[in-house]
Image 1 (cartoon, rainbow over the protein chains, first blue to last red):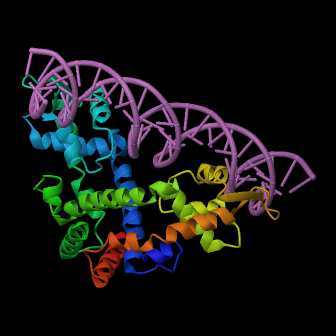
Image 2 (image 1 turned 180 degrees about the vertical axis):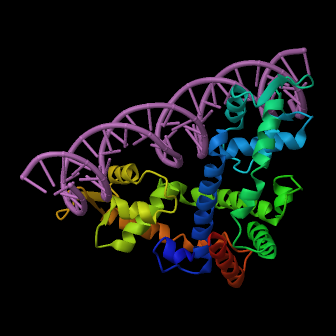
Length: 149
Length: 149
DNA sequence: TAACAAAAGATGTTATAACATTTATTATTT
DNA sequence: AAATAATAAATGTTATAACATCTTTTGTTA
């Protein structure tokens, strides 16, 4: 739906200003859909992203720093995020022998299985974008990449 | 920059999947820029949005519910957001005579002045999008609106 | 090598997001 | 009109985001 209608505001300074609001709004829209879809898995968006990074590394370990670097939201607290995942049994931590400051983080079987379950929802996830063709999605991706420079 | 490079991930299921990550990432990118720009004004993104809605209504009052409806992030707590703004002296609240359940919220002089100050940053804000032409921004807006259906 | 700087992660703190529940008031139904 | 439902906002609670600061270990320099 047109952004102006959704937030009942009609005047934007220019297309850039509208784009800023649109990005915030679209994020919120997608986050709500995703949160709803993941509700039964008892996992937050950030935790899901960490798990996916860890699956990408598997069977190798990742350090907390590597996770922080690759996280979508760089500001959040990787250390405690990992601890929360550990408490849920989705990752395990161990000391890194070569550098005792570091901590090796590996996804567990349970974590891998959880991701596998969530993978089943891929179709539903893609359906969020049913109003777009794949080529329109591609255009969006290109322009968003361009935007960030 | 290309999303794949930024988060060091190369495989997405399809363009829709990449778009989802891209929206999260772009949101985070923009939020960080904005937070940084607004740092000196001691105001959060949500509080800023509320104030702008109130300026749009001015000199009329808005109810808490109206604010909730028009908020970008519908889930957050309009009641306490307003209370925080009141504590900063940026809005004032009064009882609504026609319906005593309601609360009238009006932006104060101080609130209006703050927004006016922030308006000075419009040029800097627009500069976030220096990599896009206005027509590219328009394309993005159209496609994002279409995406949400 | 001692002193200092840098890096990795943990920990502390505060504000807020994301729910649910409660209270007060108004609207609707029987 | 009394009972019930619906609405508006406040309040309670928990988890987490967004910082800063601290501790341990490693790296660098004088």
